[in-house]
Image 1 (cartoon, rainbow, N blue to C red):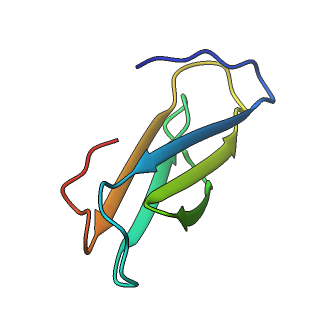
Image 2 (cartoon, rainbow, N blue to C red):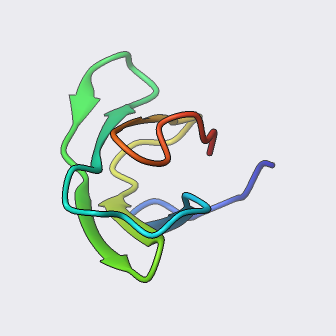
Length: 78
């Protein structure tokens, strides 16, 4: 699903993994900016089974956010 943000906006995305994390669930998020460089995202949670990620749109263009989950919920796609 595509969304549109303006330059400088905070982008927020959420992932519900479908199972309650048991302490061994480890999500990591990699954000690639339009110029191909990486950007730091803040990943918080879980709140129940939902993790939330935020980053700031610092360039015009398409971003790629790749979430990797290990442990319970590892087969879930964002």
